[in-house]
Every structure is written in structure tokens, then in C-alpha cells.
Length: 303
Image 1 (tube, one colour):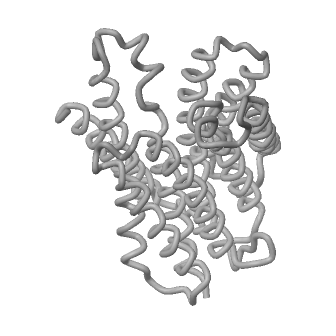
Image 2: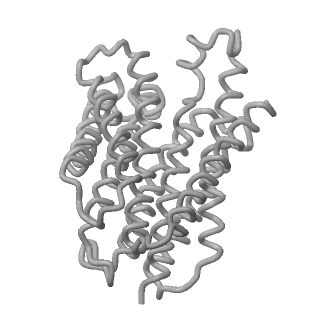
């Protein structure tokens, strides 16, 4: 147990430190000045990549368990892999203009997420009993494809933000920082709903299962308030989003512990990884929290 939790903490801290060091090193280079909106766009590319990685691993495991009975089940693997590549490319790209190929990839991923939600909803409704607790628990997870939609949406927003001027950038008819904060808050709310459903299925047998469904809503409220209120330093919102980012990686350790508790533990990993808690799912919280921090930084620079 301690080993799994420690691994999650170390991985999360390592990624957050690497991202912070990357930003600071880029800003310290002589002659290099990255506009606030471009820095936010690159952060959204990174968040999109982390979400895509989570989707790639999670859908690969779940659809393998379903024996890829429908050929459409390969779609999220392809879309998330392309979205991951686009996110990594965008995070290293300092040009202040939209990349047409990345933009198409992101829009395609978002479309695949919407289509996947339709497929999963159909899978639930066609079962005996239709939309009910049993089918919501054990049929195709209704909220899972939304992570691919979020990955595509965050990336597409990043590309659109790159085309905006450095002074007073706008998105969706409002200040960019405000728009980005609201987008992330909506994504967090949907993620909390999916986690609440699956942890309810697990009967909250571990008190730690309450953490994401209690900390997540508060993060949504704080980020929404920061987006809608007058721009100023929001130390509490920033601190809470960092807690959410760490919580996502710590969740990997708890899920690894859940897999180890099944019969055979990790020695029987090929079976238990299919039946235990989804190992790649918690980092989606981290991805959205990192995007929220980027939106908050941009919001604080606005007038």
C-alpha cells in the first residue's frame, strides 16, 4: 500500500516540478519572452496530452476486455494517440499561430468523444432494464468518452488562443482567462460526476474515495469564482488546484493498491488490471487542474 501511494506521489511531484522548471528555464533564456496567452496555450497543450495519455491507456484496457467486439472501439485509441502526439508537439511549439494539423486532430478527438458517448449510451439503453443503476455501474461507462472530448476541447482551445493578440486576448466573446477558467470548471464538474458514480459503485469502502468527490467540487467553485469575479491574485484557488493535481497522481497509487488486493495481486496482473479499479483514470484530475492553473495565471494578468 505504502509503495503504491509513494509511487503516485513521486510521479506527480516529478511531473509538476518538470513543468515548472521548463517554464522557468524558457523564461530565463536571453531574448526569449513568451506572452501570457501563449504560455497558457502551451499549458493547455500539455494538459490535453496528459488527458489523451489517460484515455489511451484506459480505453485500451477496457476495450481489450470487451474483445474489440465493435470495430469502432479502435477509434479512441487512434484519436487519443494522435491527440497525445499533438499535445506534446504543441507544448514545445512557441509560434503564436494556430497549427492546422494539430487543430484538425483536436477537433477529430472531440468529435470521437461525442460519438463515443452516443455509443456508450446506446450500450446502456439496449440492456434489460435500460437506464438504471445496474447498467450505469456495469455497462459501458457513460462518462469515459468525455475525457477524449475534453482532451480535444482543451487542445482546440489552445490552438485558437494562439491566434489571439498578446494584448487582451479574447475567446468566445469574453476575456481569454475568464473563458479558459469556465471551460476547465465545466470539465472538472463532469469528471467529478463520473468519479462519484464509480466510487458509489465501490461503496466508498476506503475513506480516501471521498477525496476526489469532495475536493473536486470546491475546485470547480473556486475556479468559477476566479473566472467571473474581477481579476486579482487568487492564492487559495491556486493552492487548491495544486492539491487537485497531486490528488490525481496519488489516486494512481490507491488504484494500484486496489489491484494488488485482488486474488493473486500483481502476480496475476493480466487478469486483475482488467477487473480492478482503472489505473490510468486518476491523472485526468491532474490534467484539468494543470489547465486550471494556466487559466488562473492568464486571468490574473487581465484588467
